[in-house]
Image 1 (tube, helix red, strand yellow):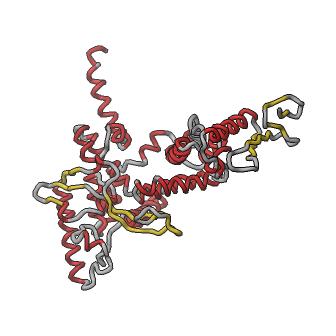
Image 2 (tube, rainbow, N blue to C red):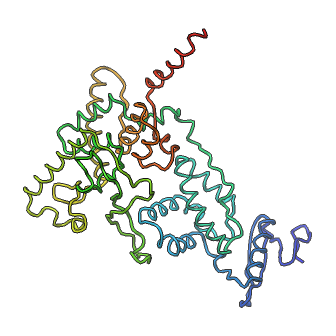
Image 3 (cartoon, rainbow, N blue to C red):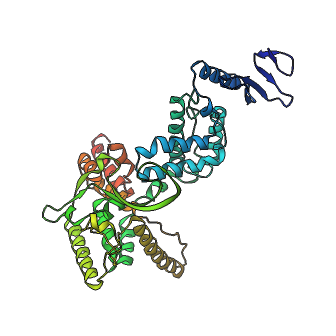
Length: 419
């Protein structure tokens, strides 16, 4: 019977070392050498020892329990995720895990506990938003749930972990939400900068359809019905980092690839109505594409996607795929010009200047908000945006303060008779 430093018995095969650390010894089948376990907490050590003894009685391998988290994550990704997830999702899983691997990736599965995960999450909370940390924790939890299902650990240490939003008090909620909505004044300034450029049409279409950038860039001319004034949305295009080949085998080095895929969510497969302005914007883009072909005899020769998608609507002057990150770059370029103008105006008037921030996805938020303020039926809006539930649509809705006050006036008028 082992003893602690005070001479008290603490269990068979367990003792306390001079440095205060508890040590357990377990003999596994097929190995003459014992497996040693360590922990500063006696109860935790007993739980680890009990788990290994359980594995022993069930003739299960203990190798998985003794590998570090980084190795288990790679094994989970290759065994499970690579065969059922899209490359974009796999990339997101790696991005999320990489945020936390520096804190706990070196820890053995058997030694991983809620405290170590909580400490890692607390560190992330000082640098990232709550939604970002939640994504990381969800990926880690899924990985460790697979470890539970395979008897590598007895319970998931992510359960009960709390995300403390250290940054939440630095910005009022209404200011943070307002950043997702582009008001009319700012839209006028933005489109004045974009005037007469090809990208003017891109952002106009995003603003008046609520499409995601990848959905717009994946459109083919056959998906654009000018007679019915309707867009068929059923695919998306992106450039993503690939960690596995087409057979699910891990690549020695990740490669970047352009891919056209179906949307991740079934609700994203939908029909989106077009306004006359949107239809006209597409007509202009089609004319510009035809002009590009006439001006460049090698148009599209380097674009392998044109073999499978010969009528891609969104292409560059050379006939390459027009990608979402091109929209982001163009948006940054236009905003930089806009900020330069507005800064000069502010300086001339002796006023302070706050830089303007606009990114392509904000046009989707603005579209949803404008539809809401025009009282478009919520069920119709769900179908147009490709959201699965009302909660997601609400997330995209940021009513203007003027609209809120106008709506509140209805209440004010309704209670006049009681005053």
